Length: 273
Image (cartoon, rainbow, N blue to C red; front, side, top):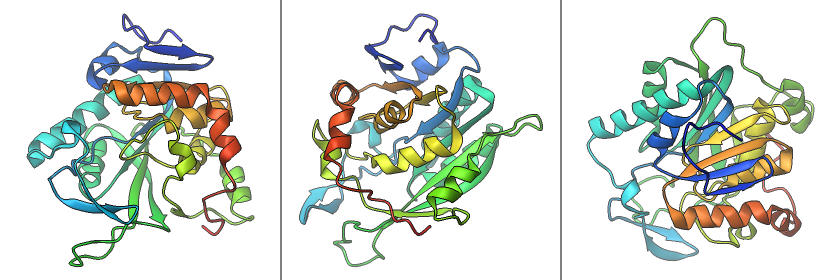
């Protein structure tokens, strides 16, 4: 998997490569127009010393210095910069999916349009078991948004496996509201990432927008749920993260992805979309 000018992968196995690197540095060194699909879960900038609920306990919302909020201008410049680099490495017919919450997704949506993307869908992921709102001053936060976009080019023709999505939805057109659980415990057996996505979300995204053997990039890969889904579904995978702890979790998950599948007792995703 030689897609970088000089960057050496931290870990490689069949059809997967992990890079312990600053995302901007890695994207700058990546070959132009080599990626079929990107899934990105960038920092939400939530770490403001507040509290939340996890497993029935009060916990800090702080996730790390990488998630510390800054000014709106700084956050928006950050989003424009990494999206600009992602556009460079995407194939003409490639697509990008970006996940976020209200804290960052509106900046991402504007940045996508400013950097030459066309938004195809606004997916709402509705969580069936969200943590309660401890302050009792707001509605419970139970959704996240996932934006799907392509290059805003009249020659771009994105791939969408409409027939499979309809089949998975009981013969009806799949809607843009997806309902399911938070990440189950068996997907965290090698360690926890604070914003880890459940496998079923990435499986659906990959099945919807890629073909077998195509190349998927996750520039903020964390614990590599994207990579586990790629291994399961026969896609190639590149993950980038600057945190050694999360890269090590990624390695264990990629090496033992069959274990998570074995432990899964059933789909966590509602069949009614």
